[in-house]
Each structure stands twice: as structure tokens, then as C-alpha cells.
Length: 188
Image (tube, rainbow, N blue to C red; front, side):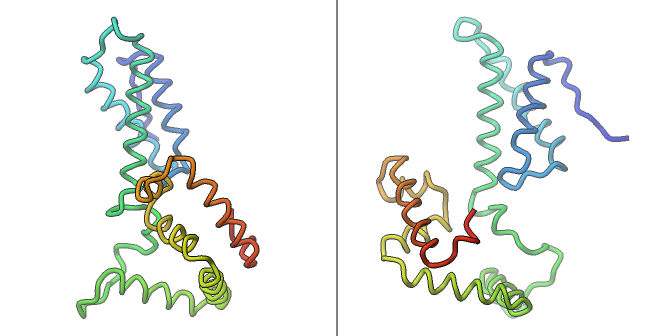
């Protein structure tokens, strides 16, 4: 029998808000349907902890609850993108044996990726195409590509001292250059 979280003591509005917001982030930032109960519990716990700080003179309770839940969701997503636990970088199981010869995790991961690419010729072709496309890019676009691999658009804007919207026009230009290089089928 599946366990379903019930937050009746928080009220109907809070229960519905938590359930709806938790469902909305499934599929984003590596969250899966199996994480739904955990996400709901995180949101409810944060709301329970912060609810005593509610001040009716500043806002309605529903507004307060909505902000608490939205901020917690932002925190959960930010945690997922932190470099030390970025969900996009985990491509192998932690149960797989690693190199015991003192190689770093990056070297081991690189070896695993190259072995995987050798098993599938289309991956090798893609890597060659990407490398050729990157070499043909102007220096500023190549720098943007490398920065986007390491962080999100907000971080890139901060690093380059740009407004939050400027990188999007540069990303559009980068995308166009990659399309011209023949990589349009791989861009989503």
C-alpha cells in the first residue's frame, strides 16, 4: 500500500499548495516521480518550521505559505545544481568500482566516458563533430560554452558582470553558430 502524505493540520490550502508545487518540479533538476513524497515532506517541514513567524499585519496567511513553499523549492533546485552534487554530472553508479591507482574522479570519469564512446561509433562521431564545432567558434563564444558547462546562466552573467538578460542573446548567437556547424539535431 503506497504511503501518501497528509498535511491536514496545515489546512486545505497548504496541503493542496504543497502537493501541486511538488508535482510541478518533477522532471526538473533531476527530480523524479519517486522523489514526490520526499519533496512534499521537505516543503511541509519547512512550512511547519516557519509558520510561527507568520505576521497577519504583513500579509495574508495564504500569501505567506505560498512564499515559503516557493522559496523552499528554489532552495531544493539550487542544491541540485551545486557543483558538489550536480545531478547532471552523475552518469555512473556509485556501486561501480573506481580506479585504485590514485587517479582522480575526473580522470576516472573521463576514462569511463571514452570507453563508452568507443562502444558506440555514433557517440564518437558526435564528439568529433562537437570538437570541430567548438574549434570553429570565436573565442568569446567558446568561453561562453565553457562557462555554461560549469554553471547556469545567472552565474555566467555574474561572472562576466552582465545584466541577467544579456547572456540569453549571446546564447542565441551561440546556438545559431552550432546550427551552422551542423549540430542542430542535437540542440533542444
